[in-house]
Every structure is written in C-alpha cells, then in structure tokens.
Length: 145
Image (tube, rainbow, N blue to C red; front, side, top):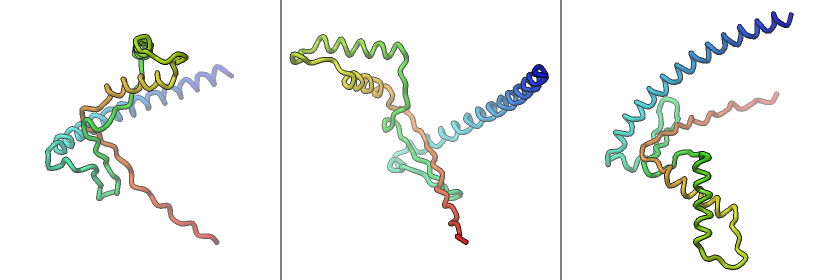
C-alpha cells in the first residue's frame, strides 16, 4: 500500500518538476526579452533631452515605470564570508591605529556602519534600472443589505 502511494507521489513529483522546468525556461526567455527592451529604453533615456524624466506612465493600464538612473541608485547586496572577514579586519586595524579616549571600546554599531559604508560604495549602479508599479486597483464598494 505505502509503495503504491510512494510511486504515485514520485510520478506527481516528476510531472510537477517537468512543468516547473518549462515555466522556468519561459521565465528566462521573458527576462531576456525584458532586458532587451530595458536596454533600448536606457539608450533613449540617456539623451540630455530626457534627463529630467523620472517616470513613465502607461495609458493602457495606468501602471508606472520608475526610472533609476546611473549613479543615482544602489544595487541590493550581501556580504560573502571573505568580505565580512576583510571588513572586520579593517575595522579592528583602524581601531588599533586610532587614539581613543581611555575606556573606549569597539562597538557593533560603529563596525556595522563601517561595513555598510564600504559595501555601499561598491554597489552604486552604473546602469539604468526600471521598476514597474501596477496601478492601484479600486475595490468595488460593498453594498450592505
């Protein structure tokens, strides 16, 4: 009985996994297509006559595309173990070189600030990016009966 259930589960798993692979292939294709369109938009928006433009609004569905210009936004980031180790070493090296008042202790907030500052400088974007925000849908009012 359990083997029959296991076999059925395995077949369902295989079927769902195949379907997911197909959807992922389609999603990758759509991402490539979107990237090509973003590149065309960036080429146009890089021209001086469009430098003041901050967003584009669709007349079709009311959605808005926010324009993130190079050097004006930061990419998302995380630290690798190596980057974290290097940042901590830098923090404690700076502390050893500094003259602090007696009783001063290294602290987490200062260390955190140093790590963030160091990483964020590397994450300033050099390219355009676009964020689409869907138009707010107004829900129909419910009628009380």
